[in-house]
Amino acid sequence: MLEAVLVLAAAVADAFRPRWALLTEIALLRHQLAVVQRSVARPRVVRFDRIVLVALAAVTPTWRNVLRIVQPETLLRWHRAGFKALWRWRSRTRPASRLDTETAALIRSMASTNRLWGAERIRGELLKLGIRVSKRTIQKYMRAARPARPRGQRWSTFLRNHSQEIWACDFLQAYDVFFRSIFAFVFIELATRKVVLAATTRFPSQAWVTQQLRNATPSGAGPRFLIRDGDDKFGAAFNALARANGIRMVRTAVRAPNMNAVCERFLGSLRRECLDPSWCSMTGTSSASSVSTSATTTPHALTKDSASRPRSPRSAPTRAISSRSQSSAVSIMITDEPPEGLFSPPIREVVDWMNRWPSSWLSTKRRARLWEREQWE
Image (cartoon, rainbow, N blue to C red; front, side):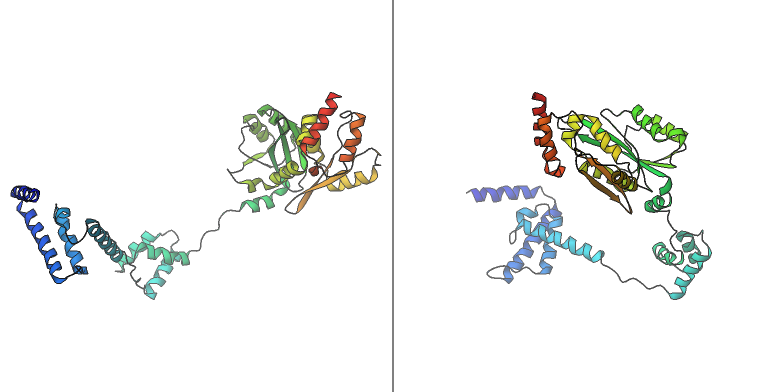
C-alpha cells in the first residue's frame, strides 16, 4: 500500500516537471537497464559507461534518486577522476622547441652590443625581422651574453679590511643567587681582541652607557666604526657623542650573531668561565667588575707580570682562561680567592682548601652555606 502511494505521488510530481528533466531521467534509466542486461551476476561498467553516466548525471537534477546500479559516491569519484585526467592532459609537459643556432647567436650579439636593451626590446627587434621568440627564451640566452654584475663586499671582507679601526660593544646580563641582575658593558677591539673598557652596573641607563663611551674614548680618540645591536640602552645621546668623535655606528641585523661574533664569543667565555653567581651575590657588582677588568690584560703582559711578581704564601691559585676568536686570543686571569675580610679565620681554611679545585666543581649551594655560616658567626 505504501509503495503504491509513493508511485502515485511520484507520478503527480512528474506532471509538474519540465520535459527536458523527464527526458534526461529516462535516458539515464535506459542506459542503466542496458548495462544490467549485459551482465547476470554483477553489472560490468566499462570506461564508456562511466563517461555516459557522469555526463547524464550532470544534466539531471534528480540523479541521486534514479541511480540504481552504483552508489552516488562512486559516481562522484568517477567525476573527480575525470577532472584529474583532463587537467593532467592539459598540463602535460610538451617538448621544448629548439631555437635555431642563428637566432640564438643573433640574440647574444644584440644583448652584448646593446647593454641597455632588455628582453622586451630585443623581442621587438626580432619581431621586425619576422622571428617570434618568447621573452623567457630571450632572457635565457641573455644571461650567457651578460655575466652577472659583481655584488658588494661581504661582511667578512669588511671586517678583515677595517679590523684595525673597528670596535664592538655589547651587554652581558648575569644573575646572582638572589636573582638580581648585573649588567656588564664591554668595548673590544677587533684587530687585537683587546678589551678597551669593561664596566658593570645594576641599572644601565642611556646616560650611563653614554658615559662609558666617553670613558672609552678620552680626548676624542676612538675607532672609525663601532658595532652595536639595536638595544634601547643606546640612546640618542650615545649616537650624538659617537658622531662628535667621528665614530660611525654599525648596527647588527636582527638574529645575526655572526655580525658581532668577536664580542659575542668573549662575552660567552666571560659568562661560562669567569662569572660565578655565588661570588656576585657576596660582593655585589665589584666581583663582576674585577673579573671584567682583568680581561683587559694582554697575554704578554700577564706572563711577564706573573713571572716577576713574587707569590705570597696565602695567595690562592690562579687559572688562565683563553677566549679565542678567529686567529687571536685574549687571556683572562682570575683568582678564586675571595676579598679580604669576607670570611672569618675558621672559614678561611675551608675556602683555601676549596680553592685547590676548579671552581666548576664547587656547587653554588655550598658557597651559599659558607656565606650564611659566616653571617651567623
